[in-house]
Length: 141
Image (cartoon, rainbow, N blue to C red; front, side, top):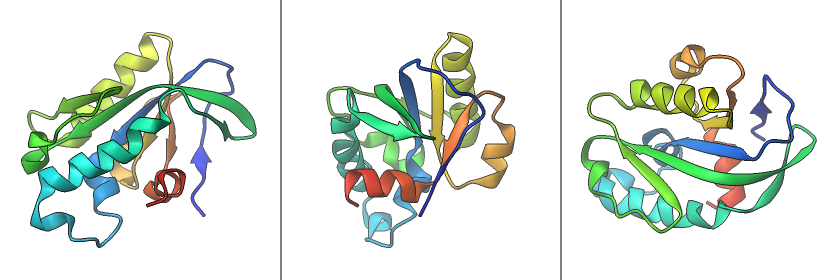
């Protein structure tokens, strides 16, 4: 079971930042055949999380916003309503860090979904992280 690794306890609504490539790659479901279509499907499954309340580290929080970072051929993915899709101009990790820092600096509580240890190490306090398994469980993937 994946768990959320947090660095802050707060009642603020949650901004979920999703490393789409990392989450897609966590399940061998053929995503590599059509990355844009696989990303579109993943985004459609994530969209209902906006406004949903869930337990994060024993605290009930509401997912106020979802930012999905896509890269490469997945940048052609269709974004469903309610999801902010950010196309990485170069590597996705740098864009994810930039998005997380901007949201955290604006006072948002941020949770980044990725299994990438290098990316996790680049995230500043108080940004929390969770692995793709945590998100996959939430969306029934």
